[in-house]
Length: 220
Image (tube, rainbow, N blue to C red):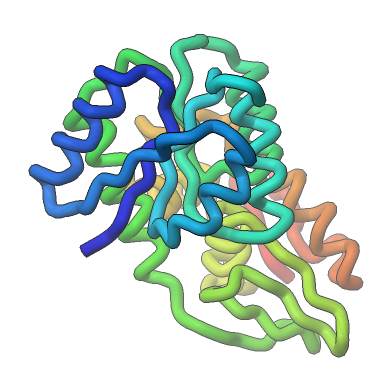
């Protein structure tokens, strides 16, 4: 049973979320203390984290950034603020998905299911231009150098790798990442592609993702 950690300071909401998760085949867990939040999350051994941006003592996005320095656990950011800046910042820090409150319980479950499905579809290890692509660890390895990608970045790179030499449209990528493009907008995909390109350059993979205007992306 997948364990989902709820990081939410609204007592009634987090209890409702736990009931929803428990009744739909997951084990809902609640983070009780907001002291050293990032470390507390990492010790909970969760399969996925629902992380609210507005939590006591520290901004949830800073917690996300701290977690990503140590772990690639799937994280869905949730917030009551309807701000595009919050969404872009969360995705740039490595969030796997983003939702605003109040959200439809069915839609939340679809987001969770889609994220787990995307992770399970990915195979383990492949080689690309002398770089070991470790999908399970979400890393690129070249010699002693190891580069950590977010789940979204790895999913994009892995999908392009599976279709190497073929143009992949933006809609196709969004369908693969979130099963339906209702779950993501163009800005979020663009942020992930930009971050992925910068990270690939760090390991010597320069200009390997080409943009074909009006068509999509090509891994060469």
